[in-house]
Image (cartoon, rainbow, N blue to C red; front, top):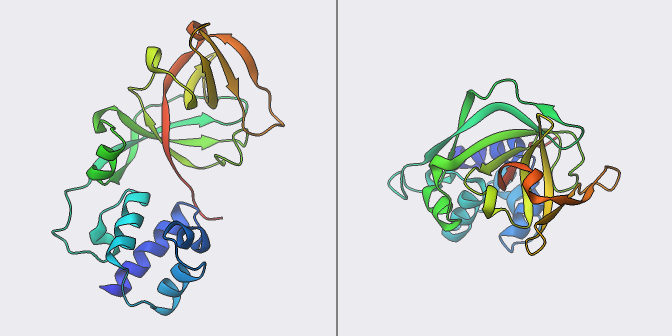
Length: 211
């Protein structure tokens, strides 16, 4: 079981483009902690609190990382849509059918006050939101956080028929919004009327594959 937990964690790290040292720091451990657990089996199993933290971070069951099968609730599936949101010059949404499903811990979703029925996962293309988001990242989008609810944050929006992922800075008093790219090499729109934006939803989580 311990070997399966190490293999599962290593697969998650590769799939989400994480690295051993960053995850070790997330747990307030020395930078080599996760690498030693995966590669050398030291410690033999994850500390309960470390396992819980990693499970919530990746949105998976604790059982996958070595917890008991009866720990926690059944994971909630979220559709991975066959569309892309461009962090570049704009990707068109040709097909919005689900191409896969990604599972998340319900307690993690509740902690973020997210309604599973209002969530979708899509993929980022381009590098205009680098280093925050990279080409190929999977992003979890809260479709309920749009319209009058828009506030400062990273959003998926439709511009001229193309899906884009950008950072919004909202001046609600003036009903104006700045549309920013985190990568300074790309264009930003400093003052747009809020009513001009077709906002799809707010980005609440990102998963990165290791290169």
